Length: 90
Image 1 (cartoon, rainbow, N blue to C red):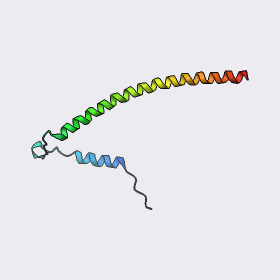
Image 2: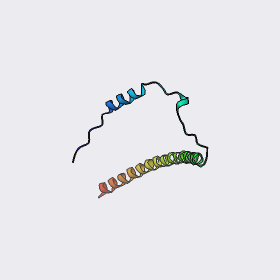
Image 3: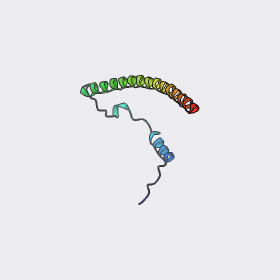
């Protein structure tokens, strides 16, 4: 099985920089496709709002998780202390 040639990042960057170092194309000569604000824009807006809502929910869950971890550590300390007492009294 033939190995792939490793990606040379430095050569890639130098090649792209050389391509970009030319003169800028005037705006009048660039053909840009314009779209109406339609369902696509609405869906994009809904997706962005959904991501924001999920981020808020994630922060709340993360905070709850931290509280649960603290509580779990307290319970584990109490449990290990009780086990030591039991073993000591045996």
